[in-house]
Image 1 (cartoon, rainbow, N blue to C red):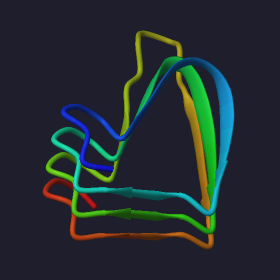
Image 2: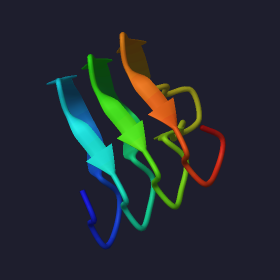
Image 3: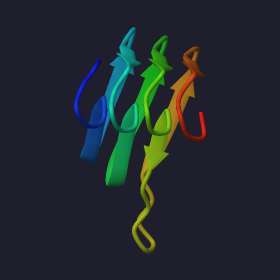
Length: 79
């Protein structure tokens, strides 16, 4: 919350985020890089200056994102 960049950045590997509040960040709420993966459960991703979630692909490499029971709203770009 209130970071000078993204609220969460995953460049590689996979994370599970539960019951988190990611809000009021300068960048995206969550940035998932080309070899990263994330699953969000029961979390709030709100009022970030970038997108709520930004998923970056690289060529034929595609990150994974799953969102369950979470609220994503009020972000500046694309949810």
